[in-house]
Amino acid sequence: MFKYFLILFILFSSAVVAQTTIEAESKIEKKSKNWDTLKYKKYERVLILGLFQQFRTFNNEFNLVPRDSLSQHVYSAESNLSGGISFCFDKFQFSLATRNNPSNTAEGKGYTKMFNLGLNVGDNRWISETYFRRFTGFYDKNVKAYDSVAKITKYYLQPRMVNSIFMQRFMYFTNYKRYSFKSGFGCNYRQLKSAATFILGGSLSVFDIQNDSAILPLKARAVYQDFGNMNGFTSVNFGVNGGVAATIVLFKAWFVMAYFTVGPEQQWRNYSLGSVDRKISYVSWSGTGRGSVGVNLKRFYMLYSITNDYNLYNQKKRRTLSSNALTNNFTLGWRFHCKTPKFYEKFMKTKLYNFL
Image (cartoon, rainbow, N blue to C red):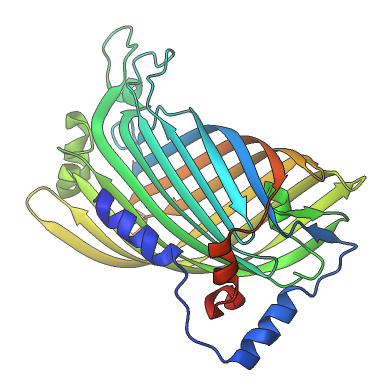
């Protein structure tokens, strides 16, 4: 499954676009540079290096209505702290995070390996955010609710349970002449005065859970009937959404930024129920909320951000599956002046670059 996600990541992140005429491209290029320089500034040719630490809580929650002690299961990833590095040049930003060393404070929660790969493409008009995440190893937070063993200190572990997520999110900013979305996340823009914008966008994602045996504990499988034997779940999702973003700036340096988007999502699901598969099509909801606070100077930037990604995979309001990722991110970065590489100069002359 991992290799299929990597293939999707490469395909969708390559930003293959339709051919346009030279006249249309020149208008797009002129339009992209037409912004209010009193509102925000772009650093044209700098290499931006960032080091970050992330504290993430990631849960997959299974519920059955009516709820009781056997019908509620929250599988959490014991992968709270991870570190990574990010690079940014012009319209491209790449990030890589991993976590392979066991935690010293797991307390019976097992251990989760985490891998995160991200690529953002875009400028002040729009941005395409693409990432791939993989978590291996989960524990059930609610084991004490249905297991009466005295003095329980351990959790129900699923060490081979793998949860992979591929996401490509597109956002267009209606007030791009006065508002810079990237400035709130330490890229090559710097918001100088407060501003806000509406966001129009869409998303394409693949959510996948696989296990070597039934996901739910043995005691709970009977109440879920045939879904109690589920050892895998895959959902391919396409959504449209809208929202708002705003940034408050003090002294052209300190800032507070937040945005929120929500919208309907078409989901094509496949439930692996042991010996059989069940395919279902649903319309649900998905949303993203993110905020950041920090200081953005000419060379140095420091920011703290928090992101909440939430997805629902309900089934006739009786069986529910929700995925919730809350990520706290602390980043230190520096902008280095540099010459534009020759290969990049050639790329800047192409139709694809002008379209981007």
